[in-house]
Image 1: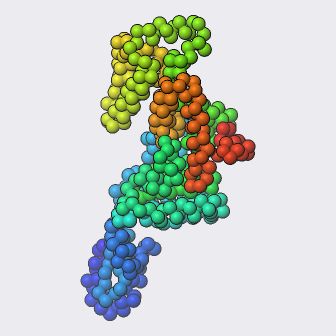
Image 2: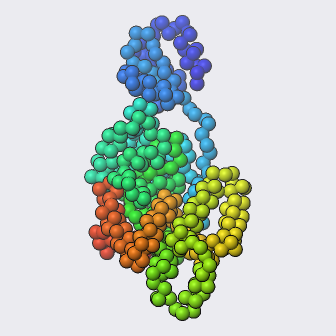
Image 3: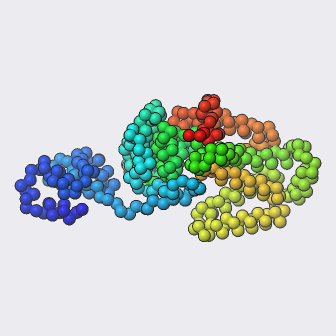
Length: 415
């Protein structure tokens, strides 16, 4: 690219060319439609930061911006964090233009709109907003554009930071923006009238607005027969209840309400917990913390070592604490089922929030028994009903109740 330009500027006939024709001559040499001119110093500096070539011509008020191709991008590969059984195997990368292309390739809709933004007051980062004009909710679109333009942070380097800047409530464990690395998932939401936000140098794209039930839906639901997709979708929603209630239910029953158990089960439970020095509450809290430690260690370590730590560490610790009499076998089973239920969510954001939510449930159940468990669940439902995602109900279609909307929340509708 550079040799023809240097030859052009070093040639003698440059002096004979009028300054107003230089831009057209350079465009004909490079033959790129992306060449443009800028006059504002801020825009020129921003283009330079993005790796573009800047040509400044003496006597000219405008600079010529020439994009320089970047060939160091990561190749398109299957996402590691979002596995599916049937479906496409490509995933988003760190390159903004590649991610836009992956969506445009799937969406041939004539009204697909792409808007360019820069976020961050000082270290500005490029972002793209994609939506389908005749399907999108324009009030939501206006609200999202307003929040993007009002970001006051000096720099936004990741989609997580951007999510925190634009979401309605940052003091809740429930994510109000869905993050995905799968182009097919993002495309499906585009077809439903959602908005996709892509940030440069990030392989995760943001889908907004979303509901609580969006985090328990998977592309696999539509790659199988409708009753199979419905069955697994209901299983995922049941897993949410299991993950937050099961430890609290165990604590309430063992500490306060053993009379509800059948005599045979009560006897077996008493035998196992008779010589355990810790109360059921401290048993549950300890094992939950150990579970989080094992998970964090598995994430941070290289893959071969992480698998060994996860399997051997879990077996050794689980066996050791039971043989030492510190924790009962029943508690190990309860925590294991809780962990499995929290990992069922197709989107990791929700699984993490559910595990954190279990701690206040256990505290209230240890204090008030079934009353505390009931109060916790009631407060949770109230919180979900009040929560919003870009001024849209987060717990839709249950709050507000919409019978027609339920068909594709709990049941995978036939399309």
